[in-house]
Amino acid sequence: MDVPPYCKHFKVLGCHLNSFACKCVVLAFIALILRAVLLPTFHSFGGAEQSKLVFISNLPLSLGQKFGIRKDKFLEVPQIVWGLNNQKIAFARACLTARFLNRTLLMPSLSASLFYKEVELLEPISFDKVFQFKKFNSLCNGFVQLGEFSDLRNRTGAFELQKGSGRRWTPERDLDQLKQHNEDPYNEFEVIRIIGKNPFLWHDHWPVKDYAKVFECLVLVDEIMNEADKVVSRIREIGAAQVRSQNESPQNGINRAEKPLLQPVPYVAEEIMERVGNIAGLKTPVVVYLAVADSLLHDPSILGGWKEGLIPYEKKKLGFEGTFKKFPYLIQSAIDYEVCLRADVFVGNSFSTFSNLIVLDRTQKLIRMGVTSSCGVDVRWPSYAYNILGEAKGPQRWMTNMSGSSLQAISYGSNDISCCVDP
Image (cartoon, rainbow, N blue to C red; front, side, top):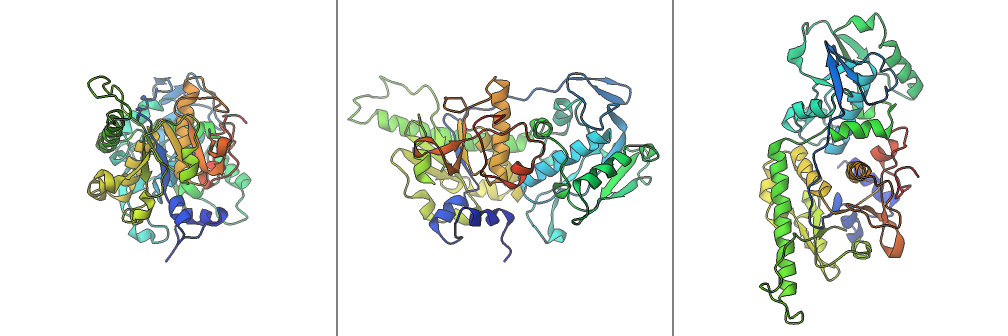
């Protein structure tokens, strides 16, 4: 059996696939939601539209972005594949490539199923079945633009651009190819169709900040958002019940009538058990939401061994296993991602693409609040890496390095993380 790409990192952590510690690492993510606060809607980038050009009014022009994004010239890319977060990165890379070429990206096909080698088994799903198409263009107005195939005047006149491959195809050669195809005579083609490998495997020429702008524009469709709402609501109910039970205990001498519960209560995730329990300021009881692989849902060991006051739940114990199974893999992942993104505290793995993208989203939120460091201070919506030892034997505080010149560390993981945006 082929081992999925995320398992290759287990060796780095000194973990064996059949060990209990490894089962903990296989928790695709550990989300810590203390009062499960919803993230606000992202704001658009602001821009003015003239004729068939969208001009940038408040953002610096990226390399190659000379004349604005043409709405009558398009870029078409291969089907985007693999896991949810690999697909998000591939999509953003395709958007930024289209931006470089001053073109609108034709809405790509995503993959609902998860296959790494059996490409013929991939189940395509339209982008707008997962993310809101109009919302994306509204939020990213003036930065990148999505178009539909119905916008094309001539569907047979595309120029096919073959992406290079192999060791000799360096980032420099790749960028030179893009520059060449940003000039005449290629500029005259209505569509440039890139053929070859999945955009996740393209050479990366774009800074972290540009990727972050694209990710901010990705808003899940209402159906997926509603499913995430149900999970968060259920976790809140459980947390509230735990606090009421504690408040009504004889030791406390408090009853519900004297001290009503006014606010929703915590939920968390973990080594990993010990490190999460050592997070400074973490109040218990707290519900631990374990967003685990389906193969672990029937393994009772993942729910045992937790510190007192840490109450573990996964989707089966929450009563949502059947609900999740009615959706394809990609939608299941999107629901879990949204639940973890809303956490008051998130604890993930620095070698996980899933965790890295959540921390990037949360870092962007903190930046908008004027927070650029979580080092030694209490911040709202903090994030941690459980695989790296931090202060007081807890997990390492974690914010995305926004000064990165590429998405390399986020795409493939790293143990070189920081608690500020510009270390």
